[in-house]
Image (tube, rainbow, N blue to C red):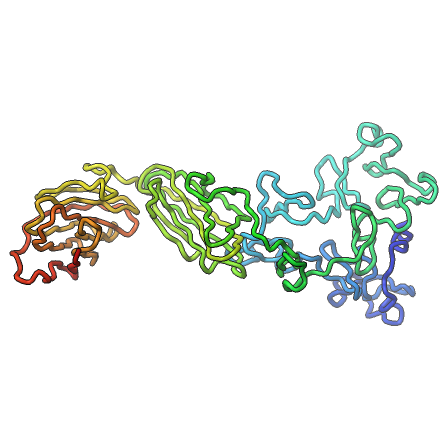
Amino acid sequence: MALALGAACSNAPSKGDGGADAGKGCAKTADCPAGEVCAIPDAGGPLACIGCRTNGECGPTQLCDAQRQCAFRPGWGDQCALNADCGAGQLCDQGLCVAAGQATLCQRNNCAAGQRCNLQNQVCEQDLGCTSDGQCLAAQVCNLGTLSCVPRCDLADAGAVCTPGQSCVQSRCVDCTADGGCGPGLACDLVSGTCTAPGLCFTDASCPAGTVCNPATNTCVTAIVPCTSNDGCARGQICDAVRGKCLSAVCQPDQFSPNQTAAQAAPIAVGTTYTNLTLCGPTDQDWYAVALLSGDRIQVTISTDVTGCGYSFDAQLRDDAGTILADGPNLSLAGVAPATASYYLRMTDGDPSCLYSFSTLVSHGQPCPPNPLGDLTSQAKAAVLDGGSVGPLYLCAGQTDWFAVTGAGAGFTATLGCDPSQGPLGLAALWPDGGAIAQSNDGNPLQTVTVPPLGLDPIYLTVSGAGQTNAFTLALGPGPKPAADAGVDGGTDGGSLGTP
């Protein structure tokens, strides 16, 4: 009956039917040139390499096209079998190496209808059905006629699984075992165990070259030609040339939307990869919240569809006050948490539409000791100094410590002491409006800046580092004698004098 069903659906061209055009002899399709199959020609005779006649003669990820060549289904290929076959930042999705942001990871049964989870690569892929019982659950068997997993039945207790009128044959429930079990005008398809009429199909395998089975009508219809450019898509669509599919050109919100502000930040877990995320235009922002311990070092790796975005992609790590602790314009970000708290990742891109994914890794570092002088991370929180020295103090990774020097009108010197092996530190003297007076960041254990008599009080000092926790001391000394020329450079170690 499988032959009768194929004939009923058949509208295959007669060219290359395997008669006079039959190719070389073969034992299996692997012996044949690409696109051909090893089968008995229509005219009979031994197995030979010929053009396909139905989809069923091709592999499960292929279709028999109008030229009677086995070609990959849209969105399928043979570039890879496992993720390890692809390059960095890519996953193996339906045999194609794609950017991680283009694949959907199997998370909490999130594969859409018509998809299933590829357990080896942990990505959702088109469900092409089963080809053996081993692809089904223990309580199921594979119905080769419909390529679907169905409940396993027991001949001794068929009624427990099968519906009235069905019987249990080879551990699966069937509607018929012969044409006589079907109504007038119907015949029994022994492969699927169902009653069918001429022209009906249950899978693509039953359809002739250039057609596929429409599951809504169970009829063979012309196969959709994969797109290779936007010209092959309808208005309002763009071509995903990797998969050969037309997609909506309108940027769609992702699973975390709305998360355009810190207040809307989506909580994320470290060590997890998040995929199918979108940024819709230069003004769009995606915010994510992550809990880190003091001293934690976080590494963020971003993957984008570089054909559509990525060149202007920017990621930032921020604290609760909005301070930027790390900036990653090159699809990579690394930062250190100065304290145990919640932090934010902010993603932006300058393109009209951007599809991306990202993953996080966190390693626990040495917690930053509390500062004896308290929180010094802003000008408003600056510790007041009127001479002498302070320390040891601790500059936490990613922070800047502030000091306000009073009685500074006559000028002064400030000397920073630190261990550069813990990470280089820099010292700067600033006007009250934040402009630089003098600065030094040469990486030496002792660095001094000189502030000339300026008649201003207070003058601010800042100590900043390169993203590592470091202990330091700060000592104040007398300034230089008043200079006749107010424009004399008062900085040392390459420091420079600015003007308010």
